[in-house]
Every structure is written in structure tokens, then in C-alpha cells.
Amino acid sequence: MRILIILPNWLGDAIMATPAIELLAQAYPQAKFTFLGSYVSIEALKHHPLCKKAIIDTTKQAPNRWLATYNLAKNLGEFSLAITFRNQIHSSLLLRLTGTVVCIARQSWHSRFLLSHTPNIKTNQHLVQQYAKLAMSNQHNFTNKIPPLQLYIKAKQFSKPTLGINAGATYGSAKRWYPERFAQVAHEYAKEYDILIFGGPNEVAMAQEIENNLKALGTQNYQNLAGKTNIEELCAHIGACSLFVTNDSGPMHVAAAYQVPTVSIFGPTRYKETSQWKNEKSRIVRHEMECSPCMKRECPLGHHNCMKEIQAEEVIEAIEKF
Image (cartoon, rainbow, N blue to C red; front, side):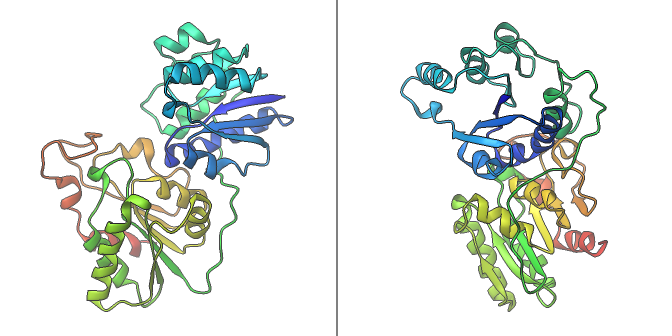
């Protein structure tokens, strides 16, 4: 049984879709998955034991995306079941053009017009729950028992307890706490933990700022990995951490998949929708504000108080609760 799964674009969203994928694996144990997605989502999820083909979706970069979508669909061919976790017209069209009869997508004007199964999934619940209910929308015996996040990348092993610091957040600056405060937290635990600084290729300068602050505080037992790891290496390193301090970001969900004790700093985003899923060792630090969650990439009011008012001492206090 061939199943086509169009993954979410963002790393964190792709990882939050893994419980839904596990539910599909349970419902169809003989299935062979074809994953289609962005580079980051494919690199994170292609190791699934039922994944027989993993394809990076490059149609957005094509001169004519409509034509590229048509060609991709014809190359993919027909499946027993197809599902998209994206709420996007090109994804709905791709499923339709494969000739697959049973196609699942969240309800929208284009999915209702093009596809067979388009459930109306309520958004006032965790994104993991939304994805799971979408995947199980044609299963009458679904009991709402949703498994934890799952990655099939083996974690590294460190010889000493290690504190991971992730100051980045790809979505935008509004989600980012401040490098000097991350450095304060890391310095507080430098005697007990080695420090790993994480960050993507666009977050090298921010990681360097954390490094500079650590140097100024006299901390030397750190390693700056920003811009130096691919997705598989990123997951393997985070999975080996003894403690993780992070913004709301993809790496936060990586840590949850490995059940790493984590303190997550939330500002403009909906923490009830995107917090760590089923990580009992998770703590959230946030301030309730009239203007949040605004869900903006940059603070629309210019003050960034949802993050600015969170002090390093609050994060340290949250760590101490472990």
C-alpha cells in the first residue's frame, strides 16, 4: 500500500506531524510512505522505517509552479492514500493530479473543490492534535490516543552533562529572546554543564554574540555549532543534551522528540498550540500581555515587551524546578 504524505514546510511543524504519521503507520502497517516536503522537513523525517521515497519539493522555485506541480504529480503516480499537512492550493492540486482517489486535506475552498476528504479541523487545540485528527479523518475507530513526537535519528552521546542553547527562531525576530540573557543562563550552569550553542546559517551572528558574552563572563567550556550542522547532525546533538534552553522554534520540538528537559521562552506565539508535545520535562517561561499572542514576525508595536520583560533569573528559576 503506497501512501503519499506532503509534510509541513517548517522543521517544528514537520516534527509535530510525526505523531500523525505514527498513527498512519499503525492504521496501515503494510504501508510504504512517500514523503514530499521542504529540505528541512525531508532531512528530519526521511529516516522513518516505512519511508521508501523522500522527495524535496522544488516546485516553488520553478518558472511556472502550476506546470511543475502537474509534472511532479504525473511522475509520482497514483497512491492508495494521499494526505497533505499543508493548507495550500498547490498541495491540493498535486494530490488531485496524482489520480489518487482517497485524498485528505484540511478543509478550504480549494481542497473541498479538488479532494475527497476535507475535514473541518478546529484550530483551538495543539497543532499535534490537529494533524492527528486530519490523518485519522477517514478512520472510524480513532480513539484520540496520540503518541509522542518521534524522530528516527540516533542521538549522540556526550561524556559530560551538556546544556544546549538555541537563541534562534526562523519565523522572525519577534520570537527571539536576547543573546546576552541566554549567555547569562548558560554561565550560571557552566560549572555543571558543557555548553553547546545552536543556530542555523542565518543565526551565526546571534550565536557569536552569545559566545562573546560568555567570554566576557569568563566561561570557556562552550562550543558554537551555529551554521555548522546539517539537520541530521542538529537533531543528533540536541538529542544528546541533558538540558535545553530555547525560543519557540524547530529545535525546541527536536528536544521534545528526545524527551530532553527543556525550558522554552514564549512571546508572540500561541503556546497552547505549539508548546512541546508530551514532554513531561518541559517548562514554559512567558508573560501574559494584552498584545500577545500577536503571531507577527516582528513586534508591530515596536517595544517587544513580551520578550524584553523576561529576565534571565526567571529562566534560571524554571530550570531549578527540574
